[in-house]
Image 1 (cartoon, rainbow, N blue to C red):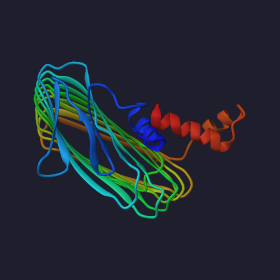
Image 2 (cartoon, helix red, strand yellow; image 1 turned 60 degrees about the vertical axis):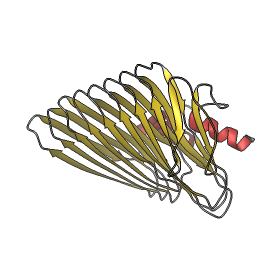
Image 3 (cartoon, rainbow, N blue to C red; image 1 turned 90 degrees about the vertical axis):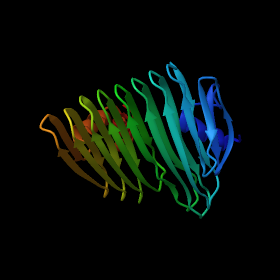
Image 4 (cartoon, one colour; image 1 turned 180 degrees about the vertical axis):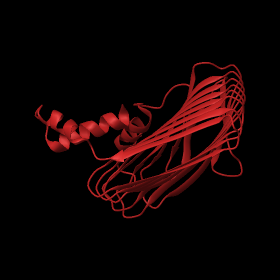
Amino acid sequence: MNDIEKKLLEKITDLHKLPSGTFSFRKNGKSEIQNNTKDVQIIPKKDKNGIDIFVNPNVKNKSIHIPVIITVGGLDDLVYNDFYIGHDADILIVAGCGIHNKTCKKSQHDGIHSFHIGKNASVKYIEKHVGEGNGSGEKILNPITKIFMEDGSHMEMETLQLEGVSSTIRKTFAKLYDNTSLNIQENILTTFDQTAKTSFKVELLGENSRVEVVSHSVAKDNSYQEFKSNLIGKNQCFGHVECDGILLNNAQIISTPMIDAENSNASLIHEAAIGKIAGDELIKLMTLGLSQEEAENMIIQGFLLG
């Protein structure tokens, strides 16, 4: 890999080089290299772009890395990745895409990920998206995530989109059965004229199923964001959605909740708070010698990255 590719890989995976263990590395629309282990197998799809990932039952404390990078203009990349997690497994999956586009042509990556999580299995999924490059060509990322959780399973999903992505449409669908829990943390930053649209549809089908969705978004300049959530409770269950946004300049954020309780024992909650950075926070930091821009950036970083 050249220096640009190495920096992209580090930004989306926090790795300085390809990891040991199970991984699949995709570059500019082609699978470059992959590695299997006895516990996790990656099999290329025969009918379309993408891979099937099989995690054996009872596998513990293993990781899978499936980064994608794009460093050319004029590429429209679509992949289908399906994960099959065996019962009682405990696995970390690190995905994400980085686009470096210095051309006048758009570059786009659409990743469709499906998770089939077996009984009592646990999955942590981290996905980072980054756009960079001083060309006028757009950098577009449109992920779709589908989650199917069998009895007793658990999933944590962390998504982070930093500055530089021209536009994104992010869709997440989930079906939860008995005694399952799904925790989603979404963090998005848009600037200039960028747009980001995200939507969640979660069906709580099983008894004692539970979902928590927290979205932190920052919109600057003339950027635009939409957040939509749809919780459907069909059993004794609990669902909570929290959407918090910070606005700067002429940006706009729209939050649209939908809650459908089809069972009297379903408890569904939506909270939203959108506004500007509090003035007293800025003043406190500026008294320490920071400029207003530096103070704003510090607050934003803390808001998005914790």
